[in-house]
Length: 591
Image (cartoon, rainbow, N blue to C red; front, side, top):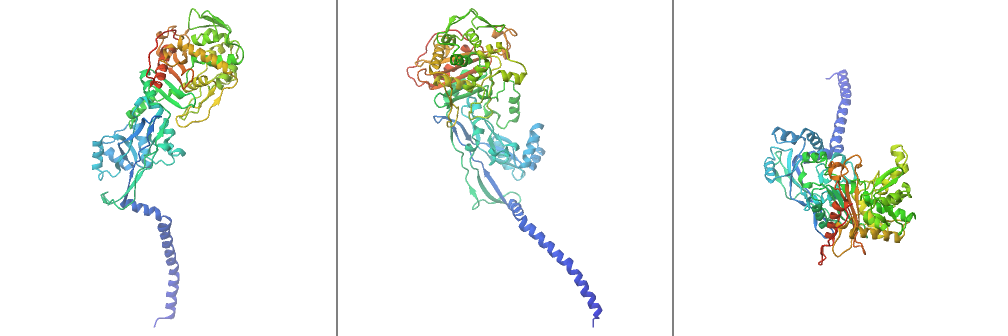
C-alpha cells in the first residue's frame, strides 16, 4: 500500500508541473493564433506563390491622333527583358548583363522593388533565347510589352514626348498612383501630361506551376483581358508638323501655330529633335543627348527664352498709341542712327529710312522710330502693356515646365542686380533687346492677339480654356498696327512670308545675342553662338484671321531671310487645299 506521504509528494509535484504545462499550451495557442490569424494572409500568399504564377499582360497605351484623325502615336508589339535581384546576379554570372556601372546602380535599386526592365525592344531571337531558359533563370523573364511608335518621328518629338520605366520618385507622386515598378509611363510631353488618359488596364492570367516552374494548370483560373488606353485627339495638324520639320532642316529653333479664335495649338515643334524610338531602352544614348550642347531634349517652343528683337515693336507701338505719345500721322526722320540718353543707337538700314509714319516704321522695321518713341515711354509703361499681351508669364499650355520669360521693369532690375534703371536701357527694350526675353508660344499668342483685335487666347492641345482681353487699346490702334504688319509682308521686311490668294500680315525680328561693338559687325563673321536670332510672327488671312504663327531660328541671321520663309511655308501648308494656288514674286529688305 502506497504511503500517504509519498502520494502527497506526487500530488505537489503534479501541481507544480501543471503551471509550465499550461504556459506551454497558452504559448502554442498564441503562436498558432499569430501564424493562422494575424499573418495568415501573408503565409497564404507565400504558399500561393509557390504554386500559383500570375502572368501580367500589358495593356497598349491609347492612340494619339491629330485633329483629322492622323495617328501621331501608337503601340506596336515589342519584347522587354525583366529581372529581379536574383535574376540580375544570374545574368551577370552568365555574362549577359551588359550595362555601365552608373546604370547598374539604378538597375539594382529598381530590381529591389520588383522585376526591373533590363532591356526593352529586344529582338525576337533574343526573347526566344531567354524564354527557352526560363527554368534555368527563374529570376529572369521576357514580357510582351507594347512599345511606343511615333509615325512622324522627329517632327512630333517634343510635342508628344516619350515613355520610360517609372522611377522610384515617380511612384510617390499622385499622378502615378496606379503604376507599379517596371511599368512604362509618360515621361515628357503629351505622353506625360495625359498619361492617366493614355494608360490602359493590364490583363492577368493565373497558372499553377510546380517547383521547377513547369505549368500544370492554365485553364479555369483567373483570366482578365488587357484594355487599351483611351484615344487622345489633339488640335494639332500633322501636315504642319511635317512642313515645319522640312523647312527647318538642320537649323535650331522652334515654331508655334495657334487657332486665332480658340487658342487651339495647330502646330508646335522644336529643333533639333530626336525620335524617341531611337533611344528607347538605350540609357547611354539618352545620357549623350543630355550632354549634347545642341540640347535636343529642350522643348524650345515652350522652354526656350529669347530676346524678341523687332517683333517686340508691336508692343511698343501699341503702348505709344494707347498712351497718346504717337498717332497715325506722326512722322519721324530716320538717318540711320539716334542719340538716346548719351548713347548712339543704329538702325539696321545704315543710310536710314527717311521720314516715316508708325505704319511705315512697322513695315520697314525702322529702329530709329522706336528709339524716339522710347524717349516718351517709361520702361514700366512698356512693361505693363507687354504683360497685358501675355509676355513675362507662362501661357497655360498643357505641356510641362513652360518658361515665363522676362519683362524688365525698374523694380525688377533693382531686385536682380541692385542697380538703377537707365533711359538708354528703355531704348533697347523698345526694340526687343536688353533684358526682355520671350518664348515662341508667347509670341504666337501675341500674333493672335493682334490678329483678333485684343483677344488673348489660352493655348491648348486638348480642349479649350477661356482667354483674356487686352484693355486700354482702341480698335483703330489695332487696325493701324495690323495694316503695318500687312505692309511688311506686301513690300517690307517680311515679304518672304507671302502666300498666294490670301493676304498675310507679319513682323520680322533680328535679335542681337552680342553687341556688334564687341563682335564682328557682319553676322556671318561671328562665331555661331554669337550670331543673331531670326524671328517671324504673323497671321492669315488678313481680313478674317484663322491662324497665327511664331517662328524663331537660333543664330539664323536676319528674320526676313531665315524665319519669314519658314512662317510662310507653315501658312501655305495650312491653306494648301486652295486649288488656285500660285506663287507671288517680289523682294524687299531683310531685317
